[in-house]
Image 1 (tube, helix red, strand yellow):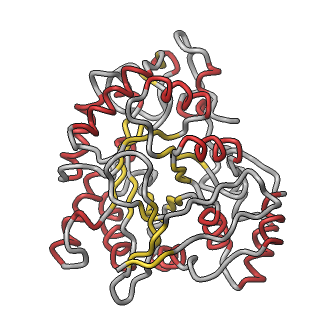
Image 2 (cartoon, rainbow, N blue to C red):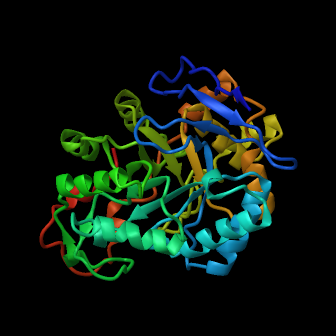
Amino acid sequence: MHANQSPSKARSQEPNTHVTSGRRTVMASKGTTAVPEVALGSGNARPMPVVGMGTAAIPPAPEATKDAVLAAIEVGYRHFDTAALYGTEKPLGEAVAEAARRGLIQSREEVFVTSKLWCTQCHPDLVLPALRQTLRNLQMEYVDLYLIHWPVALKPGPITFPAKREDAVPLDVEGVWRAMEECQRLGLAKAIGVSNFTTKHLDKVLAVATIPPAVNQVELNPVWQQRTLRTYCAEKGIHVAAYSPLGGQNLDGTGNAVMASEVLAGIAKARGKTIAQVSLRWIYEQGVTSIAKSYNVERLKQNLEIFDWELTDEDWLKISQIQQKKVVKGIDLFSREGEFTSVDTADLDVVE
């Protein structure tokens, strides 16, 4: 049973925002929150719940991941985000299988699972084997969404982070995207997309794509609003998903600009909400999906309590004036030593 659920109207103060229509709310079981879903414009995936749980734990914590995913399923999450890099595919798969055994979900089909292709496998002949390994890790027959993690290719080899600068090689966009399309055609990925791609990178994909990317997952929050990219993606029918919707962890040790925002704190106090809830609600009202990583059950619950209230026009205006700062940059994938010998560092730039 479905009911229409639409985010707030687009405010005139922010003409570049795009609010996705066609959402629906799925009735949740007792004690859980119903999360609206959005139909993707490309592929055969089930609709994507608009709030997902991230599993990028540093360092990886398999047992904690499994327990947290089970707890998240119990409170209403049906969208989970992992990647080859994170080392959390296996515990995520184990948690989904256990949830089905316990009757928390009817079957694997009830959850939306995203994973990502790492840079060492961003080569035409390595994409399909990489996805097959991901599926073995997850113990699943398919992923709902498979993303190219970065518009960066590294020499083939084991996943290491940070990477050596001399291991960066030119990315064969056409060859890699053709291999991604084959993953969808084989039914191993219901939909395909990208992550950390700018409009420049997306232009290159769209120029060669038979199947366009369904999703672009990027850093996005009130402190890095991505207006240009969101407008572009709306025009091209690409759904935007936000990682670090609550600010993430600044690698330079300068703290979390979302959680430290006086503007967001003021709105949160006035609304009787948390700063995290204000950030997630703002993202939802842009028509963007949030991928928020928390292993704390109370915060997991709070992150879903954003659908029965709205931000005001004044809130939107205040948020639109927040000073912008990007945290995650392409250069952060690499160690500081060594030299880039076969790529232009401008190609690693994901700021626009």
